[in-house]
Length: 590
Image (cartoon, rainbow, N blue to C red; front, side, top):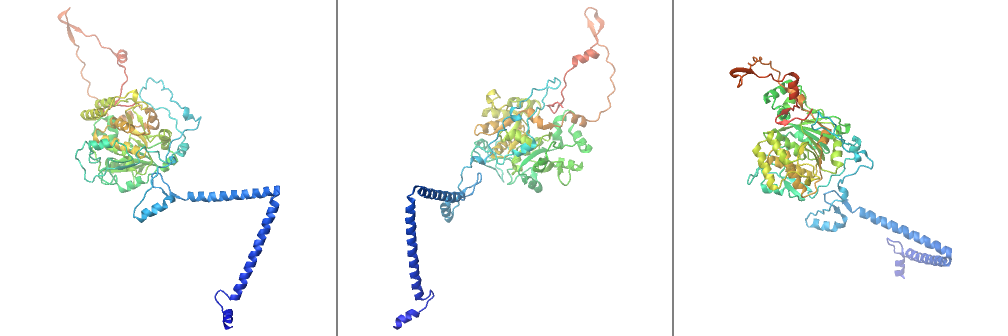
């Protein structure tokens, strides 16, 4: 009896035994009651479900419940699928949660996995069309004015969009670069000159095989593109730039307008070479201080003034003149232009040096998206965003340049350069013969829609994407290898690239170029820089009459020549249109 008593009074952490038994009986009783209630509810439902109206009501309720449940489950699955993609970038690696196990295994094995997918079509700018009925859709060039006194090149109307509309149409995404996706540049600390085929210490000495391979467009390429002796352009590469200026250019991540002046004589020598000596020109420019070599852009919007980088590349000689004349201060700015001083110039020829910022601007401003290049003699008179919209975005192009106003054939252009003494004739002949062996032919209508083989290279509008950067690099390599006359090498580079990829290229009319830039150095500059008039020399004595013998009057019978034409008769017979020629180049009408 003691044992049951001991068990009955024994306590534990979960309560006494009596309480546990009582609770178990109570739970069984409540469970039986619930089961009986369910049976009654089921019998009640069966009793009334047999009725037509009540059965339809139950059926609708059950269908609605199933429908709501399906929507809820589907939404949850969609949200889970949407969270699987963690990062998607154009031309970047893409990671998804579907490959979590595979990635974890590769990471565990010490490997790095990159899942590269093709970018979606929305990852690039694919162009646009102006809305139907827009005036620019039906815009046509009017006939040239019937002005017989002015027969030279002139500007023509261009249908620009308002600045606000042009800014609003700026693409948020880059244009596609066909085939070529990754472009890098040759760096040689110790230059190799084995098998060289032209070149320089600045651009390197690529072999003929390397040149030919550079036209074979591939997904990833490494080519010569100037600055070969340094990792970063402008640092111990030739064409050296101060660190503060390099930093300033790196901040340009949108639109860049660039120009250059290397040696003041370079700006004006082509126009005044036949009139006065170079020493007198430099002396007058340095001493007078009344000639502003920097052309200030006009008609520039406030938005462009805040967002566009205006870069003017100058040499040390020009910098000294600008400082001494009071035009350049500590801010390094002249109006909108931010001056960038280039030191240790790689070429003695200023024209060849000028091709560095002209063609290799994408290397100097690596973060810029678009650029407009202007020769130093030009003044910009239209907002940059309007120019980009008209000649790039609306045309879905990545490179735009105007045709030459007169010549469209490379062979004719070469002869014109030789006649004007623009370069050594033998070097021009060698370059043309080399291109002929590669297949260069005179321009014919068979090349349409390409309207010319000769550009007016003083203005270049382009987007900095790999394919247009490659074009600029290869064009510069030809200038570095052959003559500095870039009009001669342009069509060869263009046609080689177009034969391999669909390069979005736009060549517009020269009169359209003259609409947004104005050439400043004309006859007025010649008059301002002409040497002071010296006193006229004393008049020579009047000539003696010329005596001739007449066979009819004998050998000793002098006869006088009839008087020449005087006054109105002489002026009428000698009237003609005179041209101003300087440096072997025909001047454009002022």
